[in-house]
Length: 95
Image (cartoon, rainbow, N blue to C red; front, side):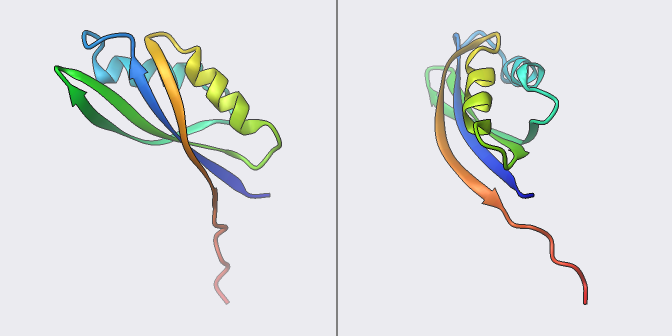
């Protein structure tokens, strides 16, 4: 079974929300089979920023919707947009 990498762009409720606070609330809203792989801050303007987050999940039907829903309902999240979904390549065995 493979895995998905789901990339989301997440906007905070306001510029007063520190990026680490937003990231912690996103981590706290993910289910146990969803793992935050990476994140980066994307400055927008006037102190406002977005977080670009990559979440790894099992390759199971409906997982993308579950991740989108979990992130959208996290505290301090004003908006989240799906940026892309990709399949992770499996590791090859040494021969």
